[in-house]
Amino acid sequence: MSNENVSAQQLRLFIERIERLEEEKKGIAEDVRAVFSEAKSQGFDARTMRTILKLRAMDKLKRMEMEALEETYRRALGLLD
Image 1: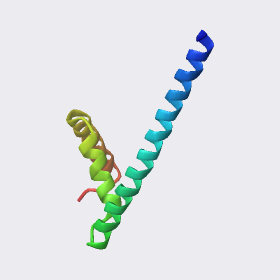
Image 2: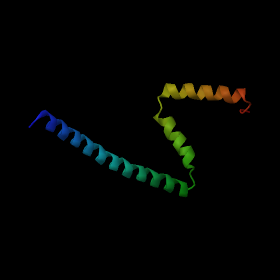
Image 3: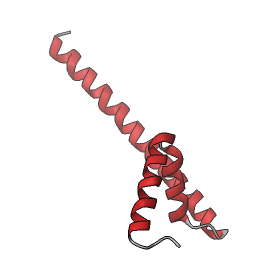
Image 4: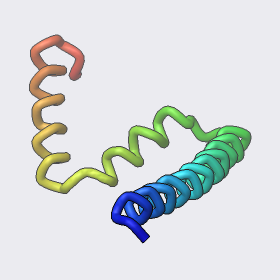
């Protein structure tokens, strides 16, 4: 088997793996949408839930820095009581 055939075969395998993963990703995305829909039907706000998910994924120190900066900006704009 020539080097070209081996490379083509490896490439094909990589492409096929990526295609399978993309299909799995699509299925997971549909599952996530279904959970958000279920939560919404029970009165939860999906937008707020997405914000909470982002915050939970953040490093604690980064999140604290962001929250402090947001508070500074809100205070500067008179958005805090």
